[in-house]
Image (cartoon, rainbow, N blue to C red; front, side, top):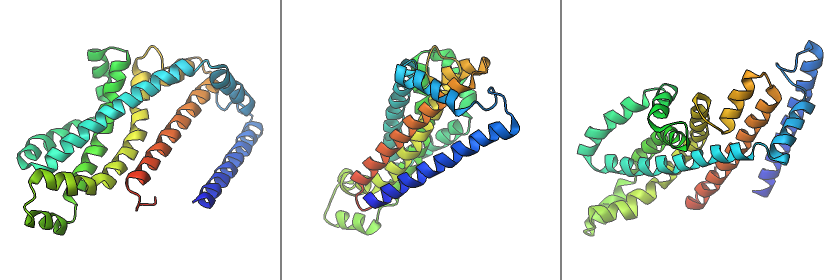
Length: 253
């Protein structure tokens, strides 16, 4: 495991070095202006001001807060509704078509409505993130609960186990692998949803920074904010994968 992680780290560093060399060569060969492709030194200065001096911390905290709260709410609602749909047919007939209909609507189209109803503060960011994170966890929960080994369910029934006990001891534990896979997708979508909402209207946040400095053609600060988003997303994804391995130890992905 350690050797694999070391190889991944070396390969990632090598890729970043090649990208940096290609970046500087492109600027020099094609004589690109800084508002198209800023030099790495300018991006480094923006990163220093943003993440060492700390001018972007307030915005990063706002984005992270909206992302995590919305993610938790979306995941909990998705697991509960997914389990109900998988277990109770009338609920499936009543809810599943509505879920498909709402998820067919682009989030970019719904986000302005959410902002109109909830304002430009954290509430609209949480609602947008929860809506975007809901579907992958919802579908994976249904697939996981319905995909449990039927022989194990028959064994529990043979010993007179109740429907609730079968769900608690067999179906939900058997669905955890699928649920965690859905959560890994939801983590990525959570940051997307929060930034989209910040693009439309927000007093602060990393998405707000990107939108504001895009108007000034200050690409260096935009890259600093985007890199920060990438790091936050990578850390959240790594934490989710670690939780997945802890909950499903026989899976090594």
